[in-house]
Length: 289
Length: 308
Image (tube, rainbow over all chains, first blue to last red):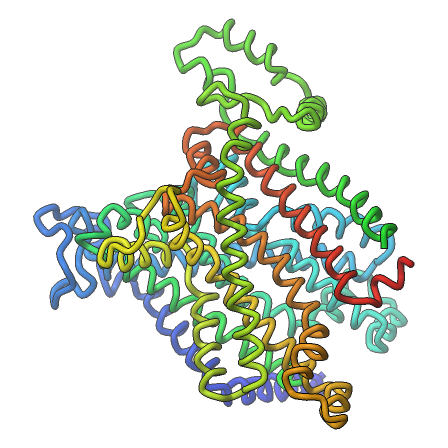
């Protein structure tokens, strides 16, 4: 047991060391840490009631200044404050919707890969049908049917990401299910659920971690897209995509309304992609070679 | 080869049935009374009941779906609650505009991405490679609707080179095509580069070089053909995001396509119109995937030989 723990620790250290050597991945990680800190301490940085939702019409559409770093919007609200609170929405939606995809897709993929045969066929054909609908269209359809709310957005993005995880976990499970440690676990009488969740899944985490990191980027982009067409977060709550959408009416005179929220989306997705690529190289060095 | 095409065509049928059922089922979860939505909040209960009965909305889900599919087979996607017109004719009248946008978006992406990917791979770690990879990374990370807005600010409002909306003439096509194609271009560039890098390290490429084959011929005749399979896969997959992206791009540029119709229908809670648009988009995506699978067989003789 002690040996196993030491082995796991040493593997994690090895992966971390490989990741730390990748400058771009570290840059991505640093950006994400800053963003996470912004999201956690959003209330400390800017008060929600007075700076984020309260309107100050005399100060509307002000250009960036020392007082309002990113300027103000059409209701005189501070764009920087709204973006800081918007990071909370984006990160929370990103993480929760990917968790939904991971749990649903991971479980389905694990069962399909482990049992094979008819179970595999049924699960994967259903997943193929989900994959036949472009993911953002599937999310749009789900939100259009269920109604616009943050929970429905997370559910919609989570469901549309499920088939991707099912495919990856299935492939990973199939690659390890016939190995000796699985057979020995079966020989000592472990149940199928124990074998899947305690033996197989921990041994095929590499592709799952990479897919999860890249999927958070996709989920943040989908949230912004849904909000942009009016299906995501509703005003006056701040969300980057919704801020972009309302800024569309002021492109000529106040481009800062669209510039900064858009940059925030680009930087976040770039950071997640850099970290995801770095993790892939660190978890599977053969790919880099 | 014919066997392969026929097999793939037959496999398309269950996918279309499955996709349409999935979308139909999701839309059936929409809360609210359809008849009340059509007749208005103040309509008498008897009239609402009568319309529900007339539209067959009291029937079980499977019966309604069966009826819908029968209609679809005859080119009938129901009637729009908002306009009272046939959804099929509404979608069909807008489809050429969406197709035009998607086609040129894909052409823009392919024409730029494959040469850039090849140059990046053949000159790995050079300045050209670094610059193209930075652009590819940015292209993947940039939401197309934001890129569209930035292009409007730069090229429409300030430089006045292109219009900021509409679909009149080739000039109105430029900004939407760049907006729609950039994300795809970035993804295809990355795949072309990594696929080429893998192929140019293979023994048969070394052998070709050792035999004295010119470097241009090695790249374009030997390496590119073998590197194309993952590239074609990504192009096929990208078509899905292109269709999704078209919804947003059309919204940004007020492009009169199916995407704009879909967004307006969602806002109007026009369920038959939303259902029709998503089903048509999904069937298109399935057909493109089928074409990609058939294209594999032409590129990879191993697949063709299986079905001889």
